[in-house]
Length: 340
Image (cartoon, rainbow, N blue to C red):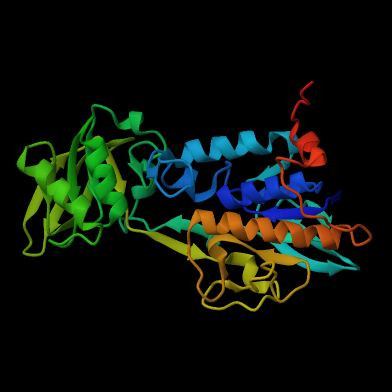
């Protein structure tokens, strides 16, 4: 049994930042995530894709942001429990008892749900036997773009991910972009760039086509695509990327007694507490009037939730708001060396 001041469910950017906010006010956190790595959707879906709306950082990647947040919380030595799903949350006197899929038990007065939109998995190709190619020549995300260098790649999809990766990988590989409609649903600017690359002979676009079959033994050697009129084309292929969006699943969260609303958790805007005292929700999973699904919004929500956690974890102590620039206690927790 692990006792702690706060349990953070979700190791994405918002979950990592709330660990920082808990740490600077003297609260210890244990972090649980059902993915096998830290970083949440930023790492799982777009580690190399630029992010432009983090304050004071003109541009960064999902991986870069994750690494910076990890560096920021180093002084607090949080424990991460990865590849574990929270199975149950129940009341235990004045605390919450959290049990995971690996039979670990946590006891804490505070639970902060920072799990994005719940657990998620990509929509996959509906072709029998295709699973054998997954993670060697068939992928639903790009974790290392250099893996695809100098290869023949077929990308399927018409959204932002398909367009962005077709554009990016066309710089280092031979790329064919396939979509079942003539119009793309991604950003118009990206669609224009893709069409421009097609005219320059740097990218092939096949519309309206859908995948018909995949050939190969251990890895993919070629695919066939089929048009609405029944026309079939065979394309020599080393790798296939499918970007059809995600299937979102709340999983066990739906059984925790929270007032769910359209697969989100309603919270108040004072401290982002749910209908259960001591259970908070921050990031994309929470909802309230005027909610913006931005990472910076999640950071704000986490800061307020952390202060509310202090009052519950240490009811006999008075919380005093302080700035890190002037608070000696906060600076000590951050490991800031005192100047002479």
